[in-house]
Length: 353
Ligand code: FES
Image 1 (cartoon, rainbow, N blue to C red):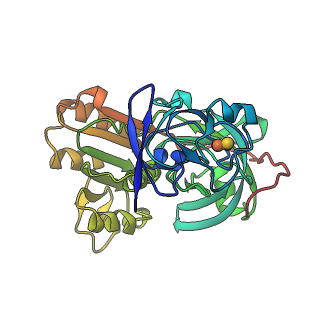
Image 2: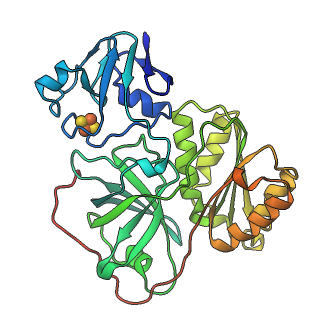
C-alpha cells in the first residue's frame, strides 16, 4: 500500500496518510487533533487550505465549499484524499479548550448488565453527527430541572458510530436507579460534552501507569483503546481496583490486551478479597498495590480515575514515592445519591438506529 506525507504548514508536524484515506481520518488515527463535526462534507468545520500538492474528493463532493473557495485553495479535510505528498494549513487542536462543547440528543441503543451494580450503555448519535472528544473526557447527561449527571466516555474517539458509558448503580433513587430499573432501550438522552481535561499527553516519552477504581475503568479503557488504534508502543501498566471480583466487570478485556500487546500489563486488586473464594491476586488498596510494584515513580506519567477518596489517598502516596505532580493526571468523580424523581429531558429528533 502506498502512503503519502501530510505536512502542517504552521507547526511543521507531519503524518502519513494511506492510499484512499482522507487527511482527517489519517490525522485522528495518529493523534493529530484537527477540528471536525459531520465528516460528510456538509458542515465546513474541517476546512483547511492546500499550500502544496494535489488532493481529490473520491467519496463526497466538498458541499460546504463554494466554487470560488475551492479555486482559492480551500479544502475539506474530512473528504480530501492526497494524491501525493501535500502541505496544508489547518487549525491544530492541542488543548481540549479548542474542542467545542456541544449539546446533542442520543438514543440508548443497548443497555447491558455487566455486573450486579454496573450497566453499559451504547448511545447512538443523530444522523450525520459526530462528537469530537479526546479519550478520557466525559459528558453530562442533562436532566429536567437543570440537573445533570457526569459519565466518562468509555469508548475511544475513533469509534464514531456510538458512545459507550459505564453506569454504576448508586443507592438512593437517583438517575442511576432510573437507568437500572426503568429506562428502556431507545430512550433519548440529551448530553453535553466533551468535558474535562483528562486525556493522554501523547507527546510524553515516559511509560504510563494507569489506575482505576470501580467504573473509573471507563475513561482508562477509552485511552487504551485510543492508544492501540494509534499504534502505541509506550509501556502501560493498568491497575484496576474494586471491592469484589464480580465488580471487575470487564476483566477479560485488559487481560486480552496484556496477551496481545507486549507494552501492556494489567493487575487487578480487590479490597474485599474474602468475598471471592478463589482469589489469588493482589489485595488491599489499589494505590498501595501500584506503589508496591513501582516504589519509585519519578520516571512515570500516572493517570487515575475513581472516587475522591481513592484519588486523594493516592495523590499523597504517589508524591511520597517521588511522582512530580505535573506528571499526575486524574479524574475524580462522586457517587453522591440524588434522591427524588428523575425526569429525563426528551425531544423528538431523528437518531441513527
Ligand atoms: Fe463537516 Fe468536514 S467535518 S465538512
